Length: 245
Image (cartoon, rainbow, N blue to C red; front, side, top):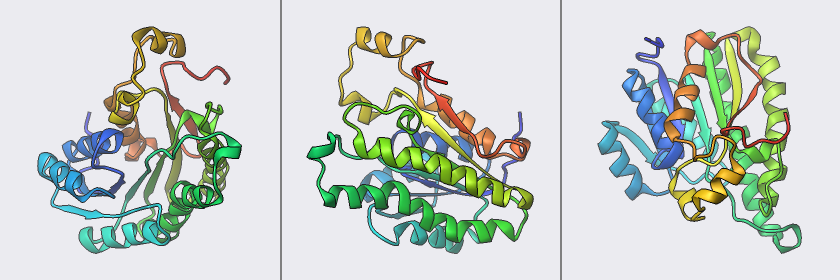
């Protein structure tokens, strides 16, 4: 199926590895013009070469102003922006009294303010063409708190409200915003947890880890012209791991 993404200008944040890299690949396969960014320039250069992306740059979303910089740099490189994939790494684990004020500020910048900064630049640019797609890659923590992920639990839940508010405001302009909530997905970050098959089966009704391509395919579809009536939604891609609704 042709998703009519050929020539669309796309920024994929956090795209040197894992879910972000897979999303970037699917966009590239669909003929989109893709800009990559992440903190690790060495990994980014390898990914850009592997995917055949000539536009990439280093960007640390935990630093103030970097969300705005990423979008401005994409507009400079691609001549505009049609699709923004906002994807950041997970914060450090820690129970409430273990987390320093500095950690709260850093995670707030990375998970929240980087989104605000990027949207302030991207939305007016999308509005010029009466078309835009924004996908926020968050976590199951946005709907169901995960043990030890205190900052993620609090900040990602708030993004759902922010997304819904902005989605309603910009729907008349042909712009949609949606959240994707990955569950236990087979990435390098999750491999570090070294979960046994038995543990995975106890956590995930589907009985297996998710493949990044499963989330990437949905992200790219939601970024296409075919998805214009889907906005303000928080969609889990988790094999049934969420216990609530």
